[in-house]
Amino acid sequence: MPSDYGLAAFIMAGAALLNSYICLRGYFDDQWPQADGHIMRILLKMGVTFNERKKDKIVIEGPFILKGGKFSLKDFPDLVPIISVLALFADSKTILCDIAHARVKESDRISDLRNELLKVGANIEEKQDQLIINPTYNHEYKEGVELDPHKDHRLAMAFSILGLKLPVFVKDIECVKKSYPDFVRDLKKLKAKVQIVRTVT
Image: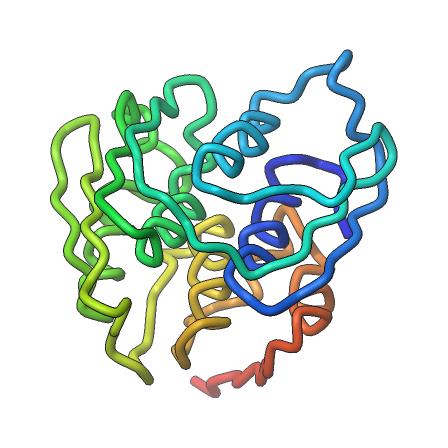
């Protein structure tokens, strides 16, 4: 499991959504801060707790009843995709604000993300620098849809975590190799059923 907070965020999110017990080992010393280390603060505010949190180990045992809220992601826009997925399963509205700069990543992580999540029936409002996510009643969403990450590794990983809760197809999943070559392997540790289909052109 990765010791980079930005990548570990996806595994922790998966653990928060599932009946799980996950131990991440690595280097999580907050004396050497990572911007994406704010994932810990956001998870705590959303109702996630940690069995252990040490410099070399984080243990999380899910699932949790997630809380909505308003979160500024000004200094860590890479967390927008995975927090948006978690927000789909929260108990109330979530507002992600100060995220305009997320539009100029590998994809437009506001419009592209919203348009793909609309396919599963998500209720998401987009503003220039915000996403407003209202979870559906009983967290019921459409299954079996294909989600296109627009060649953005973080969208691909976020959609894969969504796939832990409902069956979806993630197009071009192999784009995750850009930042997390072992993502599919680690996803399987969360009991994910992963089948990579390569299209022939």
